[in-house]
Length: 443
Image 1: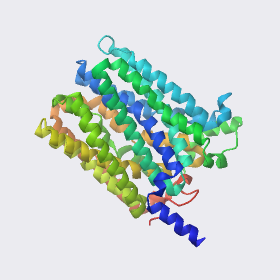
Image 2 (image 1 turned 135 degrees about the horizontal axis):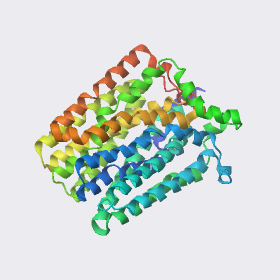
Image 3 (image 1 turned 90 degrees about the vertical axis):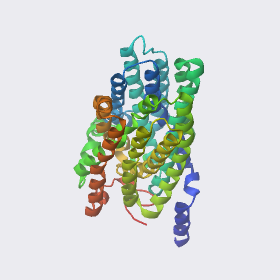
Image 4 (image 1 turned 90 degrees about the horizontal axis):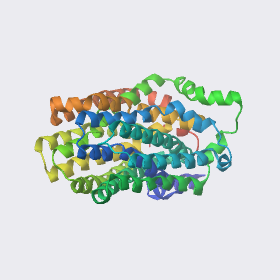
């Protein structure tokens, strides 16, 4: 027993957890999760800007992301509805395949849209990609959480963030390079293949073990519980409403800023190749470092303290873009701003995603994580779509990014208070408890 404990401790503190099959699976799941988001975020923003679409219209397209914030409304289907025929492969595997095909079809559909001739249809196609991507995320997140053991939540979240950023950056880079040579239609069609890693991962690993232990039902009453149970269980926990408030406000400033970066780059006169080099080259390596540091800090300081550090870093990262906006077209400035933002996002992505994963009850993983992840950015996305363009035009980029930094303060203060009062531990779900390790414990 002692030898096993020592061996497990060494594994947790070294590189081995990053090489375990569950963590590697999280990496490939992340690749497929990240690319639809990128195609209707920075990539579509660049496409619309180059087509001469007004800023207010471009930022309004971010409302397409609101479907990600509504995915909890249909997430129960992934938990509670068994697909005919293909369902024999397993609940998670079958939905992974079906929703992966849905994403591919939606991306190809957006590829064929022409913003200059029909902006309304382009917006409709973008929303459809959002619906497909959000639905794909539901099963990807559930598969990841149920595959990882509690002690792997930090490294697994880190590998997922590696994959997400690589998928998003690679899709964005491929789209820019292909678009410059063959047009945007070919660019989007080429990116549709990024759905395959998650589909193949599910086929190779099969149904998650933790799901097999927890779920063994399907009656009419159970189907109704699949709809209402996730919400009822969550809100019965001590401090649930404060946890939900934190989820809603913690990322307002970060989300508001992130969805406007490409507008800043375009207005400062950066070319597609420059954006690809700095956003993907510098940003990618900064992310790699940030994710690795996040995994190390998580193992050394535990969940609570590592999350608090992440909130502070993500809040102040927006100041680097205020400095870039003030400096003007500067390659060093762009590289520095992107580097710091990606480091903070990489670090924060590991520990915050680990925390949100640990909040889930394993009986309702898909529905609860959909609710949590949707709430994490809904306010920021709504504000981006309704006010970001107007705020930038009224205040200018520099003051706008200073404002987004100030908006990060409520989330930092609230989480600090939740730590001090014990609500972080009290509201933890079974995903952070069942299996090897306990996410509530500090090292």
